[in-house]
Length: 554
Image 1 (cartoon, helix red, strand yellow):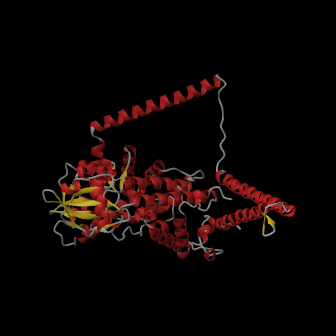
Image 2 (cartoon, one colour):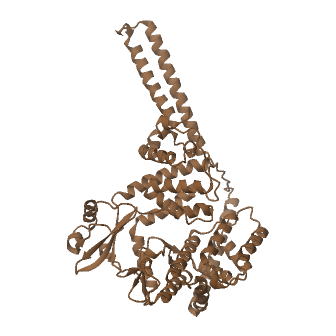
Image 3 (cartoon, one colour):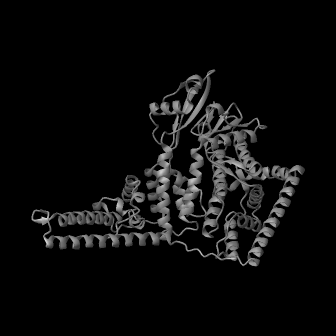
């Protein structure tokens, strides 16, 4: 009998929902491959289903993730940033995932707030609008009035959402392990690593302390800019499950038409703000869509929703500046070198083919003026190029791509003549000025000297350790088997079932001998011990049959 029964069936109901949603949305071909047959009713078990491909497969996966709820929607959104791992058709479909769900009942929210804030709920909050102003899978927002009649926005986590997400993460980890062991997906990154990356990301998003820190840093980065702002946070009323912040009074960018008197200024301001975030601050808003940016006053823009932020190192900032320079000037050698420095090449990397394909890509824009080139189209071509050559890039690299493409779309909605590449070209002078700042030059020199010294120390320490072990005859080489866990688990299951079968057979044989002996006491003219033995053997046999049927392996 399966000794992992409690572990595998800890979330039986959720596994069953997942399996049925797979079948409902045309992904039944994955049921047997992921060992999900056991969670389907016997009459619904899938024997053979057609496997969709291309666009249809991407659409069905998106529909499955959408229906499975918060954790899977967030997983799909994460996958949409990995254009180096998944094909363009899949990336585009994952971007269509909608994180909009009905709001929780206000009574549940109010009870949650009372537990979270304690006495502060009564003393600091005068009024809360019962109807949510927005509702997503993890949190929802309400307008509130604080003591002193200050208008604010409250972002509150849905009660019980962490428990639901933790269940789904555990299931994802199990399915990813099965998929990797059986090599179901031909990916450059393992399914287990994808889920581990998602686990880290969703844990950060569930802790609002991180978002509070993001808002505070963003405000600090633009403290000297009168045209860029973000909401102030009421830290004394904010926790890891709740953020109360200043209400931004203004119009969302999506509501502003092309007749606004300062459209050209605002379009350029948004693009240069993003360039500054990326190439100078190394900390950028990764989701600058029109619903997350407000126009306040005449020329001021305010960013909201800081749950998704990108971060890049000083070295990556320098490389990104070079990337923009190479794109603007169509310099193939620099562009190629920057991509290879930022990314990780596959073992079978062909540099000559890489260079020829890069030249072919840039030839599409040969002879075009900057005003004629859309950065979104360039980045889409570049993402496809990176995927085709199997180059692994940092996740923040693609977050940046998307942020710039969104910024371009927002700018063009405000000003049809807006071109983000021209803005980037103008901004390069500011980048050069920033890089030539004597204080920053000295900081970079100091950082490089420290890195050199640290590497030298690490190498010396490792060599000394190896030589010491060789001298003391204590040098050992450890071999490690990989991908044997599932095989060992299967052996355990098989051996347990064989053992159980032998025990049942022994009980039946013993009971038969007892019956033939006609040993007292008797029941129905059968020795009691023999009768009990048959009943017990039948019960164990019934459990064994159930275990086999639930496993789907029969």
